[in-house]
Image (cartoon, rainbow, N blue to C red):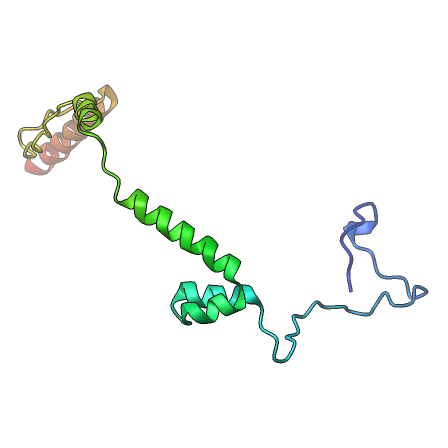
Length: 137
């Protein structure tokens, strides 16, 4: 086993000391279920997922079920809320009125060239003309 917690050692690695007992033992945490005992929150979670009935969840933990009933009622109440008309009017008036521009066809778009591109194209055309002039003679 290599322990990287001591950067002052060579290459930042340190070997475990053989003199320390239990240093090489590996302890791992495992979840062990207790047979027959179910957690009340599990029943409520199954009810929320639609896997169990509400009565089974109420038998497990009525307080959690009441909490989630209140949360569901509040969610439904807020889902039915509407924005008042004056507020909606002010919101819509604050949105700038712009019309989307239709994309121009490629031949109607402006052409922009940098000076270096113009010089490069001119030099290329001059070289092409020189090559063609030498071939024609």
